[in-house]
Image 1 (cartoon, helix red, strand yellow):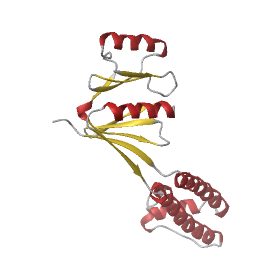
Image 2 (tube, one colour; image 1 turned 90 degrees about the vertical axis):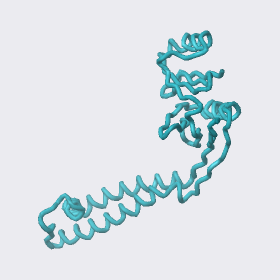
Image 3 (cartoon, one colour; image 1 turned 90 degrees about the horizontal axis):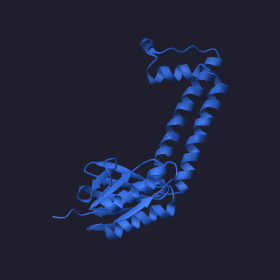
Image 4 (tube, helix red, strand yellow; image 1 turned 30 degrees about the vertical axis):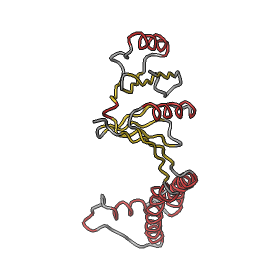
Length: 204
């Protein structure tokens, strides 16, 4: 039996490994001590806890920068939320040492793979920006544009509506979007994903 408790906002208040199961529970802060005492006395949490039998679990993952441990089981998952890096690592290490059939692996994802989504977002935003800017400049030069069939819910229609706000506002709008996307790209690129994973071999 091993029990961890927390009074931090956003954390799961009680996490336990006992009786071949992982438990998590969130009693009121002022009841945590009594809750843990009851577990130790009866050797099982109350019905208000969430229980994951070990034989259901296929993997447990700890990813740097994530404030939880992910438990994957039967096509679903559950997060054990722990903000403190040291305690989170302690829980994972205990699982690694005490869950039968657990094999530890470290997955390292490249910088570009980690930052792929914001990079794609930047490319899409740049494309839309150039399209909208081209139309807006044309409008300010006196050109008239319309959408075939008046289907303004299409991409071309949306671009035309955005272009109608004017060149300066378009630059401001897309400049803000590009700033957000580029900031996300830089952050992810500098912090590639490193994930510790326990693969659980189910007992026959």
